[in-house]
Image (cartoon, rainbow, N blue to C red):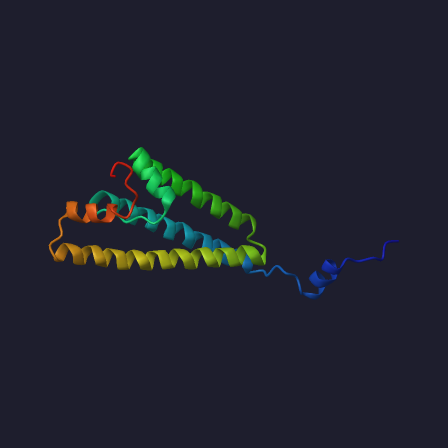
Length: 150
């Protein structure tokens, strides 16, 4: 007869399990938010790349856009990274770390969209002040290293 009961089994029976019944649902809701916020980030990136110019901070995105000159490559990169992130968080949805990770990702993407709002306002102000699209794009491209100039 086996009388040894594990500590985790006792915690679960008494109601002190690490997993909360609502945690998985909260994480799934946050994953949906991450997906929507990531799609909005990609949409704004594409709009600005095609129409206004963009001072991109992500060196991987700069490399992809300059090397391939394709929005499809950029979209595929974004899709791959978001899918990987969502996959990790989905697998960890029952754990505290998974919920924390989902909250952190949602907060970061919300901040990114607030920065997009400020960036869009700045672009609008530059156009109102008389900058042309070419002048603005040239000004923004000076933030990236030029390999042809000496």
